[in-house]
Image (tube, rainbow, N blue to C red):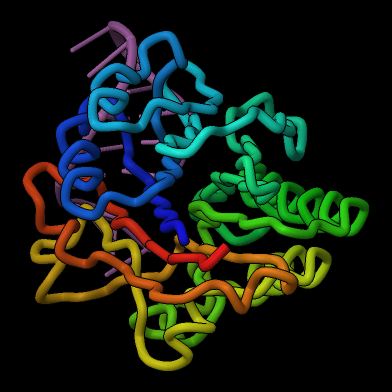
Length: 261
DNA sequence: ATGGTAGCGGGGCTA
């Protein structure tokens, strides 16, 4: 059995102590981070190794993006892909000794205007998702887990107001359709929703709210998926809402799942 | 329709 967590940390150097706190309190076997916002040379690997997380497979860049897989279990680097040819560090993969492959994604946010004619970033987001679809279709993945900040809340109960967010980037029908096509192409099972099939679920609350907890205008942007051959081994999904209330928090909270493998 | 906050890096971009 192992537990995997995914967390958009919004600068791993600024929030090194928060990562250490999560690792100490929850002791996931594997932690996937997004938006580490640093080149790998400056990733605080020693601090996490001291807590038992000796394995690191990561891709970084200066100032923006960046993804990392931290693990207590041995990992082998399984490569990365520059989806939509953006030149951004938004994907990395690693393989465990049991043969399970882990994909860690940071899908582009897509800007504010949900129209590729008016907003290049929105087009890049859709193109990124289309290339994910094509890659999964070609790959036909098995024994795989894919996690990350997908920057899309696909279901009505993944947002505080479906109606009010229909034209807001992250919940528009075209994004949901593109994400669904990528999910279908890999036959990915949404493990969080397999475990918690109904009810409001959020993993992100904007920094701009006066009182994020009281307003509770959240979205479920962070996901854990698995291929059908191992999906029934997934269980015990959790989203750690209280982490949003830690001092100087990320705007995202960790999402966890365990696998009996 | 707008503005609200945060991080990086030291101005403006990105979220």
